[in-house]
Image (tube, rainbow, N blue to C red; front, top):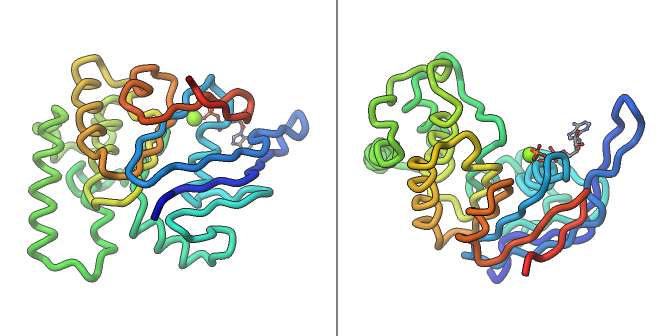
Length: 227
Ligand SMILES: Nc1ncnc2c1ncn2[C@@H]1O[C@H](COP(=O)(O)OP(=O)(O)OP(=O)(O)O)[C@@H](O)[C@H]1O
Ligand SMILES: [Mg+2]
């Protein structure tokens, strides 16, 4: 597949208390398979909205979103959920964990949907998850409850959870937000080591442009290439 993500004329608006706002104004974006693309832009410019639409969590008002050759507008809920499960790893802007489960179980949660996976493979992945968490400085946090984690710790754990299922596509919404310098270097290294995947990053952080093959800036719902 040449392009894992294609957006054509994607528009999205919201009715807010103060009236209607246009958040995405006809976005065209093509992300070549196996490349890393970073979108940088100010707060409120529409980055998360675009990422959530590509993740098929939100639907556009107009336009097309094709993910790994699948026209997402033509699919039902179950097909979309399967597409997400099979092909997409997501780091949400706000980390979502199940409060009653320790960190390691939260990180391994996406595997519980993989009925076809052998117990042996699941154990191998659990080992890998523990190693990745250690690499990101969370080796002592495996049994911590989500409420006990700092913002930066939760961010790093989310990244491991997104990567652990070996998805074709990684969608990372501000993966370095509230991560300190030392850990940021580790996060960048982990993202770079996943460079065979198709990675779309949204951020305020110019360092994430450095690791990208292509970069765009988002300004009030309009995307332009960063030279
Ligand atoms: N569900 C919603 N209802 C109404 N307005 C919304 C909704 N979701 C987002 N918005 C508005 O859309 C605009 C774009 O939001 P979005 O979260 O995409 O921005 P962003 O670029 O990710 O910002 P940040 O860098 O702060 O995360 C904002 O003005 C926001 O208030
Ligand atoms: Mg955002």
